[in-house]
Image (cartoon, helix red, strand yellow):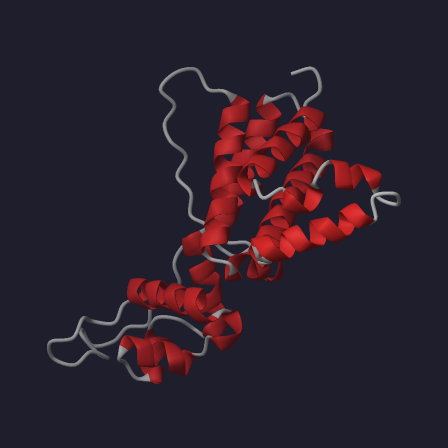
Length: 226
């Protein structure tokens, strides 16, 4: 997966206040990114265009290019913005599992708040925010005793779990009535599917609890004996 250089894009020199009429808030990279996130949240990735973004900002489409190169860069900056993470300063001795769980639950929560991000992330170059999360995860798993030879496997296992759990949760929008009806149909077929009928699989809606328990099982498997 490609990696993007860190830092904000270089801005072209221009006259102060260009692109903003009198009394309007000046156009800035920060406003462009924040507005892009709003549009992505409300309309999804397919609907984002430079003209639509400019209209929402009350600016001319060409004025955006003083701050960004193209729409692809807007995607990268918006994704990096929603995935930003600042780990808290521990009050006492650091616990590797607590550090990992806190960051991974925050990653999942960020993607659920911005559903477009989970679909976009695997298709974009990794920016500073995601690279920072992966570096933190790598350091944390190393502290837990994962050998360097196994570190990449461990990281991608966690990546696949978080991404898969988030995409499933974000796309699973069946109503409680639909799920109850499906579980009833499953009960009628319990002779063929006795175990998932007994566990009431289709009625289990504790997504957060299931994510955390699954994450604990995964971390246990990655760090046996810890």
